[in-house]
Length: 261
Image (tube, rainbow, N blue to C red; front, side):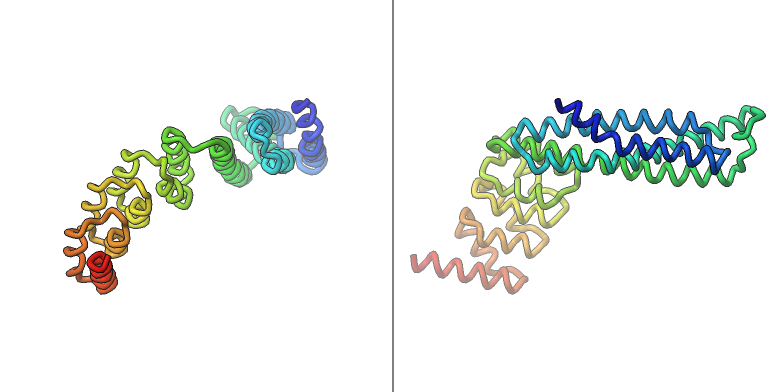
């Protein structure tokens, strides 16, 4: 049933590809129609395979919004992709014709036109491939996050976040109580300040990490050490002499609260 739905959705990109081939045939004899159609149809098949799998993942997890979005995007992306790779295929054929000195219409195309077609098609295709990759990661995140976040799943999602360079998602996972200590220790040594500070927001952050970050070079991180519930009195006394005014004042305030309580 799902396959039939995607076949019906393929009518738009297939029609666009067909009309494009007819237009090029009538208006521009320098584009090899068979190469255009062959590359375009192959790309359409790859798109159908990818979106078909993404739809099944969303449907299996009961995520109707992403499932509907996947179906809607298929027609648009398949149309753009088939045209981009179709043009790329025709440009490759023209280049092959010139290289082999084959005496036909396509060997008379100037290098400038071939390069222009190649650059246009390649840039569009590259953009689509990158976007496909991001969507693939997003689909995996949606599928994985639909269940309970186990320590193993947190690790896998953080790896996906690293691949997609999604710092917000990584920060959220670092604050999750099920985030493994090994991950917290690893991110407490990252160059990015935001990660070192976020680690301190996790209720299960190891004591050794809190102590270690008390001497961090960044005052934002040291401030988060002060407000961490695991910070010891000895560390607070150290930070009460901190060169950063906000850190120093907060540490002194925390010390006073501990004395009164």
